[in-house]
Length: 276
Image (cartoon, rainbow, N blue to C red; front, side):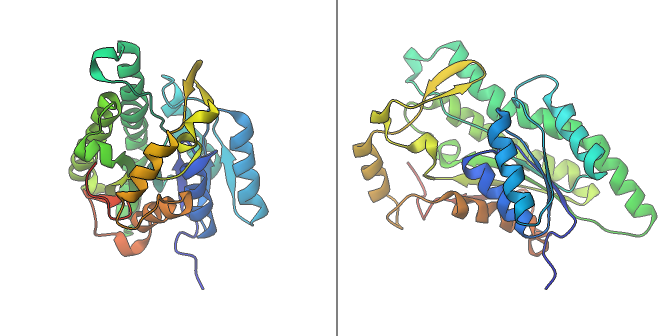
């Protein structure tokens, strides 16, 4: 049986760990060649190795998505290694919470830089490559559909107390998705958005463990209070948080040929939760 993404070239930011890793493994299992990205070389290399051991193809582009040269490096990696570009998944992200009166400018801009400016730069850098590929295909009478999947959150759709920075950035990516769907439709590119609810990763572990993540030189505390986590899960119609593999499945739906006429949409992957 032919793999649904056979020969496609997919770029996935933040794919060394968590949801991004699951997305990378899922798309690779369907034949896509993957450009893996992570802040750190080790998790990126581990994901690349896992894909190769499963019989797939992958390379790494290590670094922060917020670096001013990152977008060109990421797109360049795909073009130099695989001579093309078919799927972009803007997944990299984290949270840095506070109530509005205590939130610093640094916290505010950190979320906008990661969740909104970085995807914008990546898509801007990708446009000339996609335009050239689309033009060449049109001249040959070929029709190739490319895919952009941006990652949002139900916090971006409904807001969430203590996350004005994250919610604003994730709301912005929805607007970016809808705009780019209109701009890039003529190049046979679909642009869609996945809004996640509670997905269980290292960022949603037990806050009592005092776990931190080093992001762009900042030690950011990660985790959720267990009582709050239990309350959140009770509010989800399916009664539990999602897994990274389930989160990856929603992205996969927007990458396969069956969704070639779906564009400008936001799909909630939230276990039925429709608000916060």
